[in-house]
Image (tube, rainbow, N blue to C red; front, top):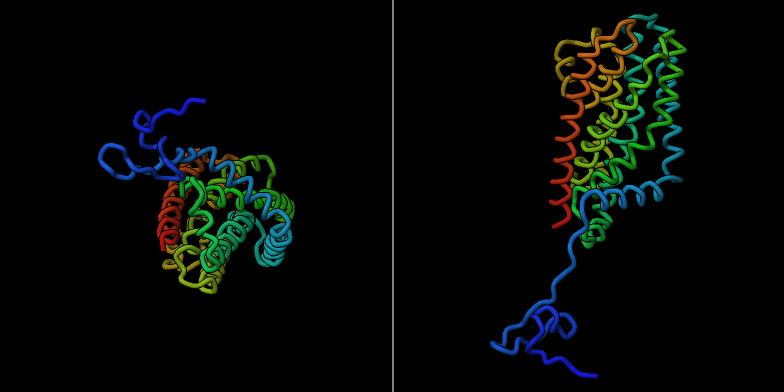
Length: 280
């Protein structure tokens, strides 16, 4: 078997291990690394891994989130008869399931991941940081689909609202889920301690409960302005409008567009927070 002289091989191919002495000038050449994974295949891989890992652990918590939202509607049934207030309660309670999982649990997950050094594992993978954040956010948001549907159906029957336009949840769940998951991931990654990440996640879910479930007309003016800053508000508004006899679809689409814009912004902040936490 003939041996090819080292002089005719490129620097990366002449590596003995990872490096080799250059025959001409004595410098050392480093072996080239493989290309990084593309965003969408990497995102799909992270999504499947997160979905498989969290399936057993999160199902009981999803039951708690659904039971909590249904219980809130039962309590509100004693003080709300119908009309705009009933629509606000059902829409807010349905999106609250998304807030519980996508905001609260995701903040706890990333807070614990950062504290335990789990980010070091992800940092060694040749995948874009956005794929890590988006994959985890999508997996957690996926767990909210059954609970949100159950809450919406039970609430509609409880308050006598039509079930005709429940298909709008196909847009509300992913858009509100993206906005809340991005916020939850950012809170977990930026919190210096996991306990603080848990606290921030709980406060965020409490804000979604108080500002999303309660009818906005009964809130003080200052609190109504704070409600407009909550990412899930626009998903609640879009869903609530579809209970009307003749929904204003232009306003519904506008609310969904705002929710989508907030989701893109919150996921971008979460990606930046992941980069920041991974290099520390």
